[in-house]
Amino acid sequence: MYRLRLWSVRHSRGLERLYKWVEGTMVALDPLFSRLGYDRVERPIAFVERNVKGLLFDCEMCGQCVLSSTGMSCPMNCPKQLRNGPCGGVRPGGFCEVRPWMRCVWVDAWSGAQTMRNGAWIEEVLPPVDRSLKGSSSWLRVAREKAAARRAAPVRSRARAIVARAFSGARRNEPASAPLAEEPTSAVNQEAQR
Amino acid sequence: MSGSSEFTHPFQAYEAPPLGHSSGSRLERVLRQGRFAVTAELNPPDSANAEDVFEAARPLAEVVDAINATDASGANCHMSSIGICSLLTRAGYGTIYQISCRDRNRIAIQGDVLGAAAMGVKNVLCLTGDGVGVGDQPGAKPVFDLDSISLLRALKTMRDEGAFLSGRKISSPPHLFLGAAENPCVPPLEWRPERLRKKIEAGAEYIQTNYIFDMPVFEAFMARVRDLGLDKKVFILAGVGPLASARAARWMRSNVPGIHIPEHVIERLEKAEKPGEEGKRLAIELIQQIREIKGVAGVHVMAYRREHQVSDIILESGVLKGRRPEGSRRARTTPGARSGREAGDEVSSASMETQPSDEGVR
Ligand code: SF4
Image 1: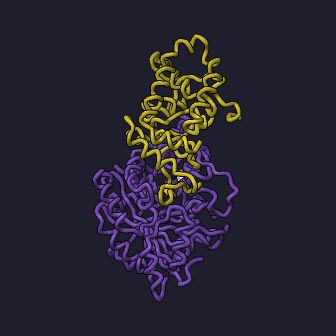
Image 2: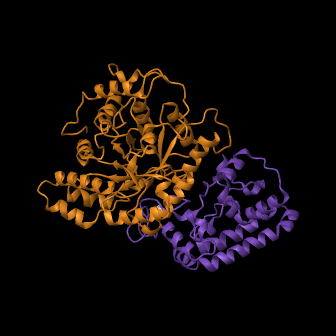
Image 3: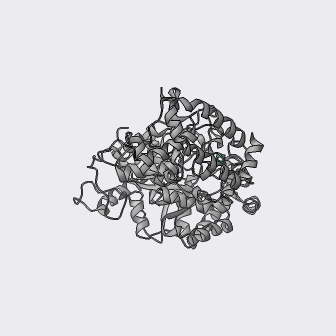
């Protein structure tokens, strides 16, 4: 919801903390998820994530959440889906070039970042979205990433390795933006792969 | 197409750039030597005739170090940037290949960049692109698979790591001078310098800005840029252009995304007897003021439908200081065989034959 989304940006600091807590919980639950199988928990967790984040951020479930690096203003709501800052077309007063009735997602992002603990993360260059992950849970992806890093799991995908290297700063802050761990089948959007 | 000598340029082996250079382009050389660089935008023809491209390029080449070929700017369809750059580069002109993220995904862009590099293109300009809604085909599907900043990093990876974003190796990586745009006079003004820093982080080596009509705003931007030390890390070319009339200026302001024209500029055009001449004078004055700002490395002239004024504006502003620009010099045909200067003279006398007419090339 547009109004709630603006509220979220205004309360970016509190939501940053809440978000970190949710992510931390997911990471802590990795042993449980591993036992149940990430493939099986994908759908129910994604369902919860979609509804919570949909309400608060107009989340589009890109599967590679970077809210902590974008002032809690979801970049998927930018009509150009920019991940690294505003375009050159922002209108006077900070309104969007493409949808003039809407505030520019990135003007809000930058002001939201000012109050956040890790507000400087907005300066990190983020990689392009992996469109094949659309619809999947970003929370679970972070859990898998952190667990895989702990286990020092081997990296099988050349494509993922180069993106993680080329955007290493982004990966440090937002592991789901440049993931390396293997994906369960249910987390890969079959539609996008065709 | 027969009769045009511009196709006779032979293919060369893909040469490594000189030490300390990314591409070995002439624009890069001018900038690294600390000379005040001049670039200009070529208005792409709505035609399949190569001669139209050369005709538009000749008057520009006399006064600039490199010619920008726009990539469907304003989401309007014209001859492609890669096509124009290929023609011009092969004919010995310095070009800047503009790449917009609006129309092509990462597969197309990376492939095109290799193709362009193979045709001799060395300068690229990474852009996000205007929304499709403002263009001549608003029903088109907007792509925006990458953004200008991830595009910069992707091309940097291709160049420096010799790999596609898929991790696949590139046997002969492209030598590119990476550029990006900045729009210092539109919101969020306070974050524009930080965004510039991000572009440099991503790989930008030079910047061409959008139109500057508001000097105080631009000066504030540059002051912040200097505070952040960014002028030491990137070459900034400030964008300037002639306005045709007060009406045209108003139209641009409300219809072209990202253009800020202060009211006093429009008033000045309104009062002028010959608004076209006044617009030209204004552009010249802006260039002269911009040249004095610390940290500015050059100017970029954009003259939509007023290309006939470009050469006057640049010459009258005096920015070239009598220097012969690099735009039309022919690159060496074989390394060491002839000096660039001799070869350059040859082309430039040929291109002297066509002088810009009052009507311009349109
Ligand atoms: S104005 Fe802001 S929200 Fe609109 S397209 Fe540009 S960056 Fe995206």
